[in-house]
Length: 138
Ligand code: AMP
Image (cartoon, rainbow, N blue to C red):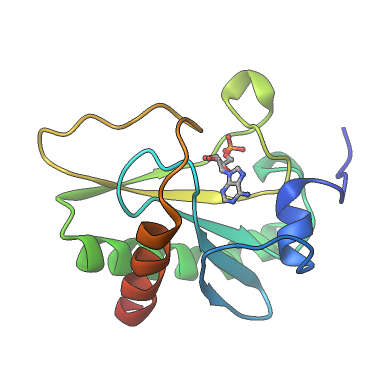
């Protein structure tokens, strides 16, 4: 299957839809997941168009991974989480719901189970606060 630019992250990257942005540069956008699996669930979206890992340009992958690490460190520092889960899904049977490559940084809190993947919507004010806190820790 080929990349379809009408996906929701494509629209956010083009500024056609709003997002709780944490950071952006010429290679990627970082934003809060609005249906978070935990407090501070953040997404890193490379600008280079690909459906997922399987069709991504290796150079784009190599370029974005240092940012994934920075966001993981910042999310941990900003939330006080005990650990960070990094997730990335490829094609619908594997759990992918938005078909533009992205990485999930999911803070994990000792003894607190993660919410369902793409479950309930978070409060916008909370997401805005978290976006600011993670941006400050980057
Ligand atoms: P995946 O299942 O890996 O494709 O993940 C897509 C993620 O995007 C899910 O965790 C959703 O909660 C999240 N999501 C969907 N729509 C939006 C949106 N408009 N803004 C932020 N996150 C979103």
